[in-house]
Length: 260
Image: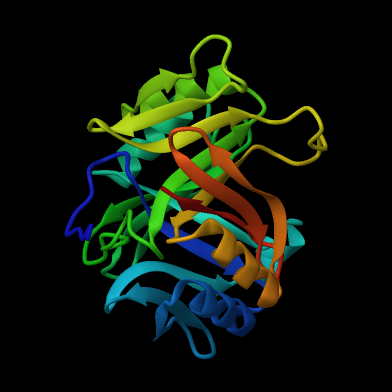
C-alpha cells in the first residue's frame, strides 16, 4: 500500500479528467477501477467528482467548460505537478520558454494552480498544495503509477523539465528498439518521455498521458471495451518491466493501464 500525506516537488500527483459527459465518464471509471466517488459542488449546477480508493482521493473528473470545448480540445486527462510555489514555478517556466494558459489562481483553500504549455506544445498543470495534496494513494491497483510525455522534440522537452523541476533523466540504451527517457523525482522513476511516432498526424500536439496500475492488463482492457471504451494500443509486453495497453474512454479521453 502506497499512501501519501505529501509529495516531493516535481511529482505528478493528481490526474484530473476533463470530459463532455461527467456522469457517463464517472460510471465508466468506477466500473473499471473500482473507484468510489465523492461529488463536491463547485458552483450552482456543477460538481467536481473526486475518485477515491479506501476513502482516499486518487483523481477527479469535471465537465469541460465551454471555452475549453471552443478551443477544439477533446476530452482529456490533465496532469498536475506538485510545486512549492506556483508563482515562482510559472516565472521560471516562462523564462525557459513555456506559454501560460492560465496564470496562478487560488482554488479556495485547497491549493494554488496554473496551467502551462511546454515549448514543445504539451499542456500540464502546476499545483501548490494547501489542504489538498493531490492523490493520497499512488502506485497500487486503481491509482496513478506513471505519467508519460509524447513530444515532437525530446531534447527541448528534457532541457525544459529538468531545469524546471530538477528531474533526473535516464535514456534508453543505444540500439534499444525505441527511444525512451525515464525521469526520476528524488530517486524514484515515475515519468516517461518518447518521441511522437512518425505515423502520428502532425496536427496532434505533444501531450501528457496518465498510466493507472491494474492487477491484469488483459482483463482490464477487455472490461474497458465492454464498458464502451476503445483499445488504441496493445496489450503489449515491456520486457523485464510489465504489460500495458492504451485506451480511449467512451468520451474519447486517452489513458493507459499498466501491470507490473
